[in-house]
Amino acid sequence: MVQETEKFRTHLMKKLSKKDIFGDSLQEVVDICTEIFSSFLHTEYGGPGTLLVIPFVDMADTLNEKGLPGGPQAARAAVKWAQDHVAKDWNAWTGSDN
Image (cartoon, rainbow, N blue to C red; front, side, top):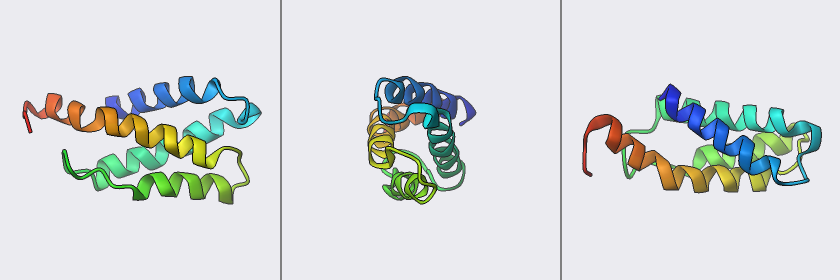
């Protein structure tokens, strides 16, 4: 799970750095999203079919509550990456084809 979290962080940093809206807040935005994603992976994710929307809504809400820019854009980038990678990576970790 640590490796998946780092892949997530790296992708999000690269993806969001291309957008002008984050400015000096980029690192903080990525850190918050990564913390929420990691917590979800470690406590709630149970394999393919269990990716929930809640952590991504939490990302947008937390960023907005902290007055940081780009909450919806960061959450959208995060959920897109998760949809494309988490179940596939889970299967690779567990040796499962499901």
